[in-house]
Length: 466
View (cartoon, rainbow, N blue to C red):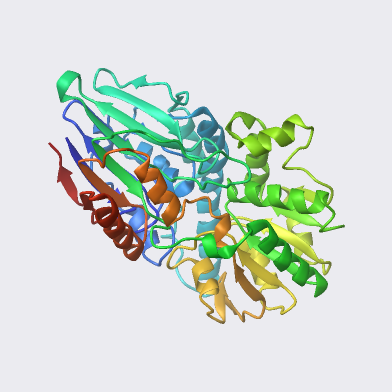
């Protein structure tokens, strides 16, 4: 058996790992590379493997940095099934077409800008179209959580709840048969232990080999205090200034977690008459998808629902889908909270809200999740001013705040706790899905604390396993 790491190796996005057993060629995730100027070229590069030769694609969850290149994989010749959970499939119905639309919109914006500058724009094409993204959906096959699924005699795959976002799974592969069977576990992205909506990740005992994420492998969030209180404080100060709180948030997971916390603050009377807008058709659809899968909720949220409280609905909340209503938000001077995608400010309506609000000192831009290197979100978060949005420069006068506690990723302590729950250390552990410094730091802790045999692979590296 061999594993080749074709993405999210010493970087956060672009998750893509090829497992070749001789009997099967399994691709774990096929994600879009986000952040950094080189992402445009890298996303367009041919896959370093024959897409038509793959036996299965196994998808851990729906986030675009794990699923966003599936349309390119199908264009490259893949004709097999894409295995994932039912809630993930529901989210893919939303996210993949939206990603295709964004690719087309970005191409159109670039064409318009080049023509305005008198330059040739005939070479500009979208990475893939909405139609090409929709074509992926026909290849999706759903598998129930914690139910082994046969891989045509090559072994089985079991999806174990990961708690990261709705439908997110730890991938548990048992490859081969009898005494030669080997167990490979891919953590996907692991969730946090005190999320407001979702239950924490489950343990997967005694894997032989492990591919593990490390997004927050070098930091702990314990010093942030109560995240609901921190959220209240930032919103309350901004509203008192008659400003707006602009929250870039992933449409799936982060947005719903923020809404659940705002629900508590509004219904407890602490943020009276607060106007909250979710301005993202994808986030609105994803919120409705969450409502359809309450079985994934945490015990706390289940108890709320049983008591008759809807955790994702409260007075003052408006879900926006139309372009006209979105534009109207930017012409309103009333205090409000605006939650919009994308979470790293790389595309979508959030860029328009930043354009109109970033230069006003009454406003606050609140980052509630990880910002990849090179993304507009990271540029703003790092204190750069002015910043470029849609080809124009804007000074950053708004207050910039960060609450990493709302990240859907486990922090270092939670990652270590999950690793410890596996029992004996795997024969080999591969640390991925983290910036190089975070991955190396986390690997060192695993080695010192557990005596683990850890590798932090380079992108493109292939490892042969016994």
